[in-house]
Length: 265
Image (tube, rainbow, N blue to C red; front, side, top):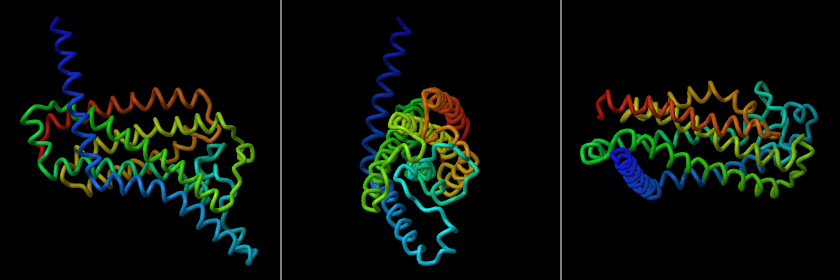
């Protein structure tokens, strides 16, 4: 009986926290700015690099110095999953969003500490575990929106730039691209949880949490092409769908400890 009461209480608290967090997120201009950047970024990259590629054809020497986008799916990733590739197609693709997600997490959580919302929240009703779990879910939902908008922007940008949409030309398939996107979405949980943990460490020191999140992201950046290649399969999906939440749960527990053992200001 007591166990059922505790479960019901936890469910009600979490539901309330989720409502508050979603409401607060969608009243912040920052989320719309980030979503707008996610949509516009691939359009700008594909159109501008296509234009630059056309201009460089005048100079044969210049045209061999940079590998430009020739296929729209290059904006999503590469089939080989080569983490050591340093050309423009591997550096300026959807994987850039992981850093944007980390920055947004730091901005969103940092605002809670800056405004004093966190201190008031924990004083009145909420538990720190509820806060961490709610933030993880809400910010993961925001990251999904950013990735979906980037995908849409890539399709628009590819059409404007006149790039090929042939999936076979990049060594992938329609199923592989779907698996790739699912893998990337759940891999975003890793960046969300890392940034959330560092935001609880930095608190009002926004610069500290952002720098820490970007540094951690740089260390993980080479893993992304290997974990989420363009020709992903069931193994990649299972690995990310299972690993992302497990990683988030582990760092969420650390965030809970940090909030419980340190000052909220």
